[in-house]
Amino acid sequence: MHRYILELENVSQIFGEKTNPTHALRSVSLQVPEKEVVIIMGPSGAGKSTLLAIAGALRRPTAGEVIIDGQRLSVLSDHSLADVRLHKIGFVFQEFNLLESLSVMQNLELVLDGAVDPYFRAQANLIFQIDSEGESNFEVEEAYAETTSLPGNFQVKAGQFQTEFGRLNPTHPHSWSFVDVPLINGRFFGEDGLRNPGARLSWLTPLPFYSELFLAVQNSFGETASSFASDHDGEPWFGRPAVDRSLDSFGELLFTPRWAVSFDPSPTVTVLAGASAAVGPNASGGDTATQVYGVDAYLTWKAANHHGGFPFVAWQTEAMIRRYEAGAYDGSDPAQPDPLPAETLTDYGFYTQLTCGFRKGWVVGLRGDWVSADSGAFEPDPDRDPRWRISPNLTWFPTEYSKLRLQYNLDDREAEGVDHSVWLQMEFTLGAHAAHKF
Image (cartoon, rainbow, N blue to C red; front, side):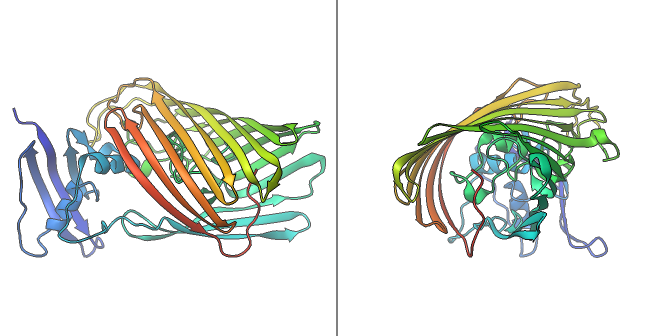
């Protein structure tokens, strides 16, 4: 019996408007056994490039199914699809090329910040991106106002903002100590983090050390609420397609409480710790919910005779657990024909990182990540498989407005094996910018 490394089942691709569609592919089926060489030939415009892009997991077809090494691509998220491209597919060009649908540039960010009046300040973070399809997108990452003079040490924030869960999620990528998001944050909150429109109340308690309580209430729907009521762009999640839910009651909102404390054990050492939770509905059933719990810690040492903040040592860590109530699924979607029972899926993991500013402008770092999960009915699932990663890096800050970073990742996925990657990052800031969150 043949083992097929690539299968296409009734694949179609349509471009253009519905009133004037162009059919690049019509119901193409193909089976390629392991170790077999296949050559695709045809005149210009026959659809060869489109077929190769779909077979190579660079483009999702309008209809039909692509199966690579037994894995149906229609049930995978964009992040898992990138893993398939990394481990199972290679491209050889006749000349030097970048993949047309992928981009070197990640984003451009414009920050607007200032006082509205004596009672409010406002901030907006506007993002220009080029997505994986080569399309230009404009996104409002954050746009909120917050009070500055409420009595009793209270503060209210309202608008679109990054949820204050843990240490990393509320911060912007340009302030991170590593190129990429930790595995646990990416798995639970997506690559863009947990953020949505809503309101947040905080209270700075009257204790002799820093102690602040937060409660955010936000919309639980949309692509930036990955573990909650996101429909994942119509793709199945944990083997289950999204059901229709609407924000028509208080119980459909996302609630995120947090407690953060900080103290100074000595004049050169500062410790900050916190505990967070996020509770809201998810899209796998009509009454299913998700709970995410996390703890975080940050410790920094800075020499008493430091110059410009150097030398220093900083340690940061977060641990999280997610309980996802997955609804029962009857197998009615052709993309995922296997029925699944109702179950609670438990995922967990942590990251820990150490950075050292050994001389002015130079920082060396090391991060370790680990994620895993209890078994579920839908397996194997790249979105839940065990994975660990080690990431050393070196960062040079010519000034406070620019940086160059070199990072290496050793990444081990249970189902995919080990891969190695090297990242070179350059960032620069134009104009004044607000102080980063401590």
